[in-house]
Image (cartoon, rainbow, N blue to C red):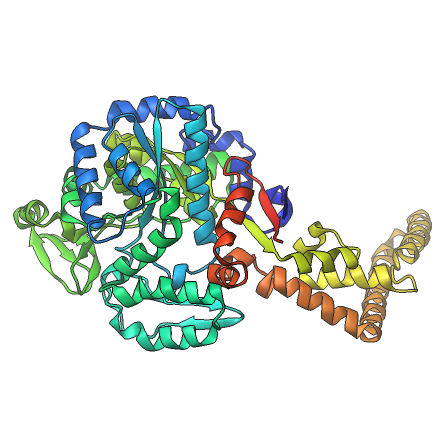
Length: 535
């Protein structure tokens, strides 16, 4: 196995905003707490320790112990839950939706990044403890986003009429899908182990939240990962003051809009917000609904069902049923940082982009803003695929080209004729430069005619070059086919593999060794894209 890395900007797959953040663009300094480095965590530790209370820590541990009551705990997870009672213990957190069978590959990269950072921090700050947290997005209600996964080129989808929070969905109607999937994966040792994972998760759970917890726990319990479902009354009680403030003052909207203005004025006038705030950034949540809360002349209401509250009845509802108040995408980070002794949030590019809008909001609520860290991104390349790349005399960087550009490059490389007409263009440019000089010295009114003729000639050469290239592709059709197939393996659908393929596709090939292989290859503080060549 070997690993190399490529700057994110050079991949062509990451936004300018994220690349600028990694490269420490000065205009983004005001939007973060600190840049992620092993040294900057010292100040973050001090700040969080000063703000996080013992009472909150006690409630957190109690909630986690309850959620793990029916799970077989590993020694590593048990130890980390106990450590959370210690004021010198802090968390590193990543969050993700409850995608079916973990969804795209980057879900695993997120968690591995989180676990590896905890190890690095423990080595650097031995007097403190660091616990990796996976925050399950159980309150999310976008079922379509989580209801499928891609496996060996096929889309496997769960058909269900969903209402409310996805974490509460029953999974008893998944049996036929599970049967179909299990029947397609064979009977080797890795396939049989995967069937055991399914039996102990989806086939043994009442809800999607429980099934996801059980599946992820089996994969990562030996690394001490603690899985948290924050959709609980006891943890929501800790968030009551912030819910009341949001309903009364709309500080999230005010501060986020100010941050958006600052980014557009100081960073780039082309900046487009990742998420736009609302007047109230809370949902009303029951088993059947998750609907936005809006302000009315009489008090408050839910936007669709028109459940209404006066000011007084709303305050009573918050006190009596705090679990019914669900933060939206902009309020959820605050909820996370209120209930966890957290130092750093690890997320994808889209997540980090909306976190960059939130520092002012955190300051208004007097809650420390965490360090933001882009999760590890990588492509997993099978050994036989890596050998094919070498045999084709191509560099791994070539595969970050779009497929057509890669094929064109290779066709030019292997053709026995020179398909590059750039020398003709250069000679033509010399001739037109001479002609333009002649026109300017005689009758400048002919300049437009010369320019039009020049453009026509260059267009003709471009068209001829394309036709020659297409003709050569037809002659070399076998090579084109092999190259297209190879590119599809590494960048399926011309997108990043991690956004398309499912982790268990690799699990079936490499078995339980795949996670250690990935873990050894990813350094969360390297801040470059990883190319991992598997055995």
